[in-house]
Image (tube, rainbow, N blue to C red):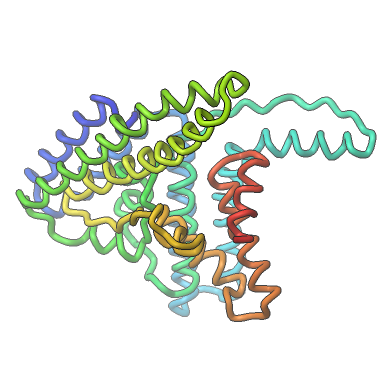
Length: 343
């Protein structure tokens, strides 16, 4: 189910109506049902993996929490977190990167004179898997570090993983912020709902009026580059920068607005990134929830900047290489990530 579909708007407004008509203690259940309805319409088969990720990380959180509280065996703590991370990363790699790994394997063998016939892997990427996987990973790591207490309520944790406004394209939520919001009282707030609707309208303008219209011009040139030269190609590239920003920012604004209608105030995901004066500042303004995730869960664990200059540079390159592959499965995105890391 797409944000730019009538089905999504019907689901959203029915959910908002029911949400404010029922007692506070059942509001989480309303949102959980709506989130799974949203996901089943997007791809019912792949809901299995969403449920599996939820159950595995919920269970691992409880087990790690027992160790942290002194009632579990400490020697199993690292094993539990490792298995949880491997399970979630394994699902993501299997669906998103399997065919790329197959092609890379074949090309490497060809370099040494070996020819191996491998069948193409045709897997449809489950909706939102890149986002809910990262949320699940961050929860497991936060519990392991002792930054958050494990969530005892399976339903509320499932809502954190599957919250439908953020499921498709973020912003990526942190468990310590979102789980608290679930327990807060959310009475009907006309001003909040109005702000949410206006934010969504701005998002739809960015997506449908700006991004989708620019896409027509960009695709015309990019699909037949030999036909266009000079100024036309330059303009297409310039338009593409605004297209990709408006598309992504539009989705984020729709998500933030939809959540606002239900009393959830999500963090901003974009802050005028094209006004940045450096690549470093750009990444503090572009897809903020993702860059923050990589900083907290990859860059800092690698040592961050508290190490030698060589190691610090290596850490940055590793982070941006992974970031590139997260955005897309091709060597183009690999070099895109490395280029940003070098800058």
